[in-house]
Amino acid sequence: MLKDLLNIDGGVISVVGSGGKKTFIENFSKELKDDLKIGESILITTTMGMAIPRGLRWDEIFIPNKIFLKTAHTRKIVYYGNGIDGRKMGPIENLDGLSNFKYVIINADNSDSKPLKANDDFEPNVLKETDMTVGVIPWGYLGRFVNGEIVQNENLFKMRFEKDAITKKTYKDIITSPDGLFKGAKGRKVLLIANVYKENDDFFDFANYIKKHVDMEIIYGDQKEGKYNKI
Image 1 (cartoon, rainbow, N blue to C red):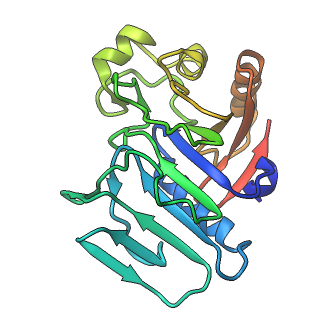
Image 2 (image 1 turned 180 degrees about the vertical axis):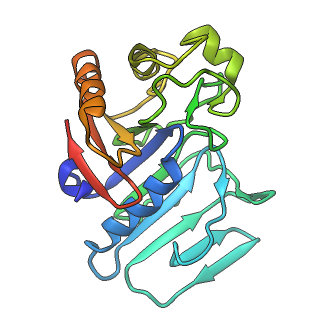
Image 3 (image 1 turned 120 degrees about the vertical axis):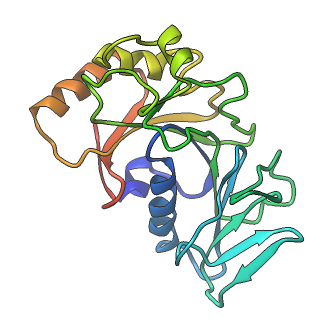
C-alpha cells in the first residue's frame, strides 16, 4: 500500500506536477479511507481549481452557497471548493476552518491534463501548512518531441528544459530545477513517477539515472491499479 511506503498517519499532502495528479488523488484517497476509523474523514481541495468530481468518488461535496451533497457514510471523502468557476471547484487560499480531517489532500498545481509542463509564475501554489509535497511526473515520454500536445506552456518549457526530444536529462531538469516540479514545495518531498504499467529494462535504466541525480524519496507505479514500489 502507498500509505505504508510513505509511512504516514495523517497530515496535509500537497500534490504538484503534470499528468496523473487527479487519478493519484482519487485512488490514494480511496486507499486512505479504507484505513480510517469511524468518524474520521479525508478532505480533498485545491489551491489552483479542479474539476468537480463525478460518479462515486466522494461522500460529500461542499461548495458554500452552491452545492452540498452528502451520504450517510461514517468514514468520508469530502471535496471542498471555494465557489465554482465553470465546471471547476474554486481554489482555497488557506486551511482556516478546515482542520478537522485526518488527511487533507490538496491539488496544488495545474497542467491542463498535459503530461509535462513548465510552471507559470503563480504555479504551483503550496500552502504553508503542507507536511508533504508529492510531485507527479509520468513515465513514457522519452524520445517524444516537445509540442503543445504533450507540454503545457510549450514556449516556456523550451526555454527552460528542452527544445527538441525529451531525454532523461530533461526529466532530471524538470524535477531538480528551482522553477520546476518542486518549486515552492513544503515539508517532505516525494517524487512519484506515474504511469509505470510495465517494469522493463528501459524503465529501470531511466529510474537508476533519476535516482543518481535526484536527492529525495522516489516512488513509482501504476496509479490506476494502485500498485507502487520504492526506488
